Amino acid sequence: MTKGRSFHGEEGIHGERWLELHDGYFGDHEVAWPFLNTIEEIIDKSHPAVIADLGGGTGFILGELLRRSNTAEMKLINVDVSSKQLSLCLDKRIVTICESASLVTRRHLQVGDGALLLIARSLLHYFGKFGSRSLLRNIRSLLREGELFIHQSACFGQDSDARCLNLLYSLMGTEKWYGTEGEMTEMLQQAGLEICSSSPAPTLHLSSRDLSERYGLSPERISSIRTEVKRQHGNIPDVFSPTDDGFDAWLHYRIFVCRAI
Image (cartoon, rainbow, N blue to C red; front, side, top):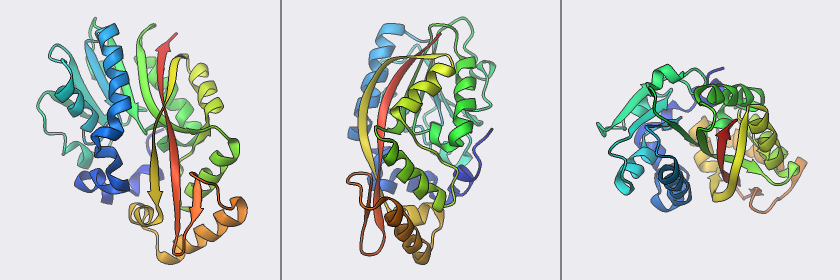
């Protein structure tokens, strides 16, 4: 499965606008700090020959690794299905591959006999409830036993919070899906990935203004979404909050370090 409606309706905010959207979350150095620190800790321990960022978009994370870390002997690869996102990845030290994370193979990554480290930030939910399981199986197929996958993924502690966000995204016309921490653990284990550690990452604030731009939603559509989510779930602090002319929502992220078993 490749990215479907969840991706292909968003090309308008790819490129420079992507780094500004949602309060600049995906281009913010401080927001990325916990994820980058985790990656650097693993690099120091595992010394990979290749680091591949699945769904790496503009190349921001790999660019930060180049700026912060000694990666001179490592091949850095940015895999993304959006050519518009990849067009901003201008550093010649980063190889770009325009392909879906669900279709990329180890041969694409040209790892050879070296060790592979896979990373991803805010990727899994694009593939939907069932597609994310298939994606994780493909990710596992890229890894040899003992190799690592570090991902920052949205998931919730409470099932009611996840259901609220899933209703919101369904009403916006996307196939994105968010699970609980328990569901994430189950999916990773079923794919053959053992969780070595899990830690919180900065929460992503989603304003209805930004979401209307991202998904092409009219003011009337935003109003009807606000009404329906409020009717079913009310006001959930730090998850969904109605406003006078729309709503605010929040995605809660965790950073998972996983080993192929």
